Amino acid sequence: MNTMLYLKKTLFCALAITLFNSSVSSAAEKQKANCLNVPPEGFRALFNGKDLSGWIGMNFHQIKGGPAAFRKMDAEAQKKILDKNWKDVLEHWSVDKGELVNDGHGVYLTTAEDFGDFELRLDYKTVAKADSGIYLRGVPQVQIWDTTEAGGKWKIKANLGSGGLYNNKGEGKLPLVHADKPFGQWNHLQIIMKGENVTVYLNDKLVVDNKKMDNYFEKDKPIYKTGPIQLQTHGGEIRFRDVFLKKI
Image (cartoon, one colour):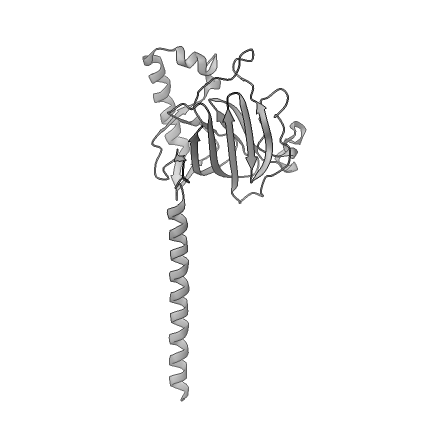
């Protein structure tokens, strides 16, 4: 085979391999994107991967009396709060490549629908010094935070990990094990709520084992029978994806 023919064949093969790898990579990326926010059997997607349909903005901490007080307001008063909060949502929440993104500020993204007993699954990814959480029936919270010493919160037990019912007075407040992944990686939460009790798995490790959740807003009363799911924001960017719920 002469040198020129050999070079032509070599270049042709190299180009073919490059195109093949590019095609495989593109197909894999497309398949991954298509799988985002598609719920497993028996679950529904609370986030559709495209926009904020089905969500409102709410921070019950800003309302004296919390969720119970908001429910007692007349429709006009509620609408005034919700309209103001929605403007805040649009400023601080966005959708990027099938992911819910918050810049670390603003009211909490809140389901427009209330839920009783459920299993909630979601993935989250956050950054250093961020502090977040998942509110259940509008009550804080399954804790998410920076668990490193540099995060500055070891004095309040951040070193023990995320996933605990941080606003509990007793059992369930602190996670059973540290299960957080390093920054830049996705964490998976599985939360099961039945009655007053909550079980939490973080990255498939049991961190809360069927513990009663305290009512943060009305400490002398049991937790509400129904309420919204809220994605708390504070201190740094956090991303959510694959937010799935199954009623029990």
